[in-house]
Amino acid sequence: MKKTVDSLDKRFIIAHREALIGVVLVIINFIWWYGFAYGLGSAKVESYTYIFGLPAWFFYSCIVGSIVMIILVILTVKFLFKDVPFDVEEGDIK
Image 1 (cartoon, rainbow, N blue to C red):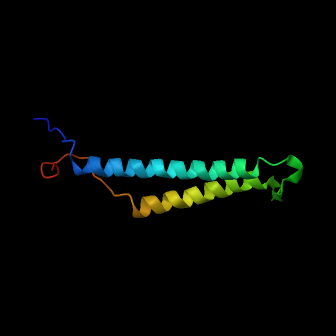
Image 2 (cartoon, rainbow, N blue to C red; image 1 turned 180 degrees about the vertical axis):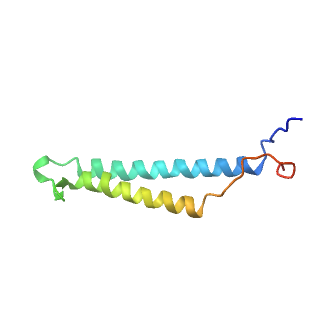
Image 3 (tube, rainbow, N blue to C red; image 1 turned 120 degrees about the vertical axis):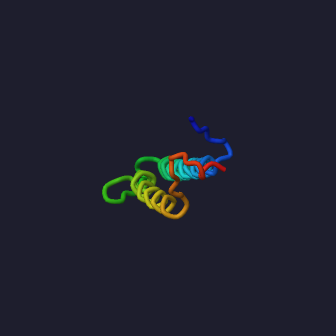
């Protein structure tokens, strides 16, 4: 006998919550990148400041942004995501 999984299963609620968290992280990443890339990068090239030989807009939007997002993803997975079993067992469906 094949068991079906109800759409109100707790695993779906957790999966939807975690997907929403992922979308929020993508939006944060885009805002960070766009803000620094077009905020600092819209000036004339002659007025750019450089950090480690890279334009400041690139350094903050791509290098620092990547580091910040890696840390945010690690913290999100560690503290907000839950380990959910994929197996359907008799007592699991609620």
